[in-house]
Image (cartoon, rainbow, N blue to C red; front, side, top):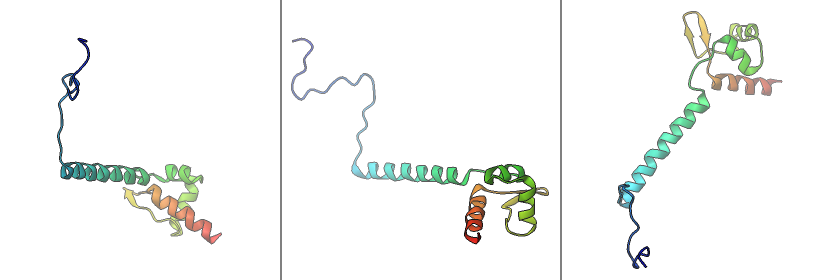
Length: 104
């Protein structure tokens, strides 16, 4: 038959390049990809940014005023400031909520 291949004959590559790699290359590639995925997941978990008091309040379901009260009393520490505006990371807010639940 014209369309059949002989045993051991490779199928056509359709113009795609063939990559040959030894085990060390594959291990290094896998480690690099795993590190990048871990970094992205950690970034996602941390929220990749800061929340102002209004957004922080929405995040933990309280008012902006309550966030201000918590900050003023030292129960919630800002992670930074934009001028005079305190800024919070989601991880800090999550930690506050967990600790507040333990105190209750």
